[in-house]
Figure 1 (cartoon, helix red, strand yellow):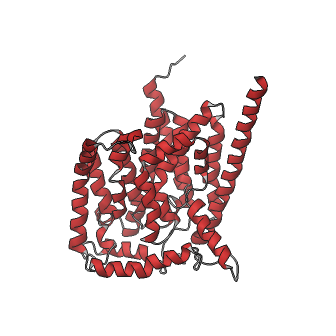
Figure 2 (cartoon, one colour):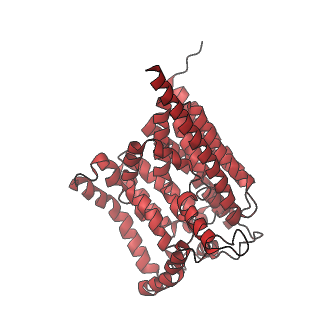
Figure 3 (tube, helix red, strand yellow):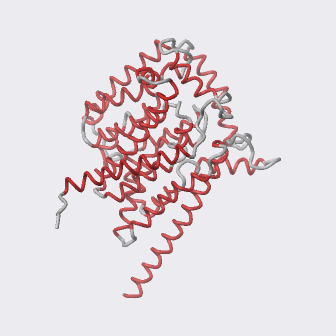
Length: 405
């Protein structure tokens, strides 16, 4: 009988991951209405038009924030394809390799193939992280996710040079990358975060980030035609006040109301539902089954998680901003799944659960900005039902142990 060695088995698993990632992303493409000229929102949503203009006029810097995000239009111009195709290839490739890197990081941490695969499927099921960026392939978020994950990978590999380079590329993609800057310190300090200050780690972190920070500040000062003061006034009037109105229920956070003559209270509930459950499809509920493990993970990624919510006051959308903290949410969930499997729960249940979250979004494909609300609601329903099953299973197991005693 042929005996499979570890290298051969590793190659087979990696090949399977590549196939699954490609197949799942391809299924999203085939069931999504891409943001092309026929799309009803193509001329109404100015953001992607800004990125297209930036690529068409590469060195004719426009208004911020487009003038700060130069890497994506630069790569698009380097690729030997028509502009639309180049944007799409770059976005698809970035999402594909983001999934692969995510799997690699999870496998390095958990040493478990199935748990890491579940984490990758969770990632691909996050509507506002993946499907949104397939439809709005003009946006730089796909490339941003790639650099964010690559930076986390570099931290775990303790590769400071790679980390410094990736941070600089990331911040030239989108300034949101700045939130990843402190992760070298936070991840490496581990359980000592709130107990002591490690000056060596802090200095290393600063040195690693200096090239990226310098490049970003230089780019911002050289390309911004609008003064920081004027830009700040616009931000207060257009974003900050608008966000406050959403948080207290004066304005709906959806494109249009769910029902005619929608009451203030229903608007308020919908807005806060989107804040609490609208981003990740509910799979994070699993983290509550092991609060100690969850605390260890979330504390290491505290800057990223806090900033993902603070963004709500400086940019539009809700879920699209919150989902940048997807990695610690997925990592925490996967680690808790590992602890539940050790207690006797079959890991295949979690595989089926992750796949169900991915598949259900394929049934909501017409009006992205509206039906996404229902797609995520369906994911949340599945998550609540699965969480209920886990509670029932665990309580039943505990009662069985007590009976045996």
